[in-house]
Length: 296
Figure 1 (spheres, rainbow, N blue to C red):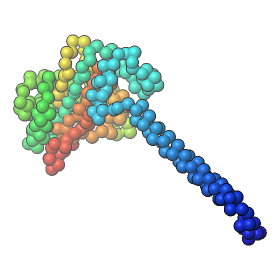
Figure 2: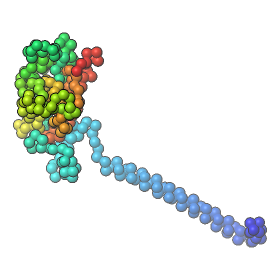
Figure 3: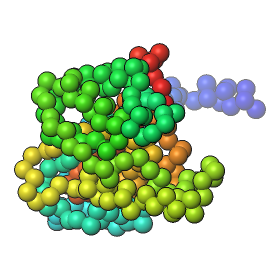
């Protein structure tokens, strides 16, 4: 049948044959143009979508604290409340009981004291070991390398914290007056979970938590109205309280404090922004201490 159709086509006039050939060619060209148009349309749609997406996406800065700080400068009517309202169940923005009174942040450098004689007969004899003093020298050098104008150097009432603060101060180009706060003395805030041999009844018997919570309220709060610049405070104290403070400020379960390990002389850096937001820049950083001198 194909041969017959081919013979019939040859028997037709030349003009008609040309018309049929042109019709077939036109049909094929239109088909190719159709598919080319579809592919072009898909390509342009993809390009347009990506361009629109890149325009609509907010430009986040790599430095989170600066980005948040800039966000805080926006007028209140320009801040999207939908995000804050949807996250209110997992973050209490009024954790310190204060409202935004200053536009400046507060920076805290929380230092664990150096290695000490933990088997000494009395608290006053629990002084730093030779290695502990060396660890805090590295800590002081690291703080000095930050080129920050520190405002205060605070330490607990225990001898190992005082010695650690003294060594840090010796490494700073600008010396600071040492401030003693006995509320920062080591203690047991709450019974840890999972159970580690200490019950909540034991913790209540020690009675340390009210004192420790007082220390927390003293140093962990947004800037007051009379603060006219960023502040940088160094606080030298102890692992139990420091770990409890980390959980408390980050609004983690406070019973989780024992799950955190902090090396001697380590630095935990926390920034409190003017709206009460928290930026934890480091936890237990001890990378500046030689590995063969690290203890916990």
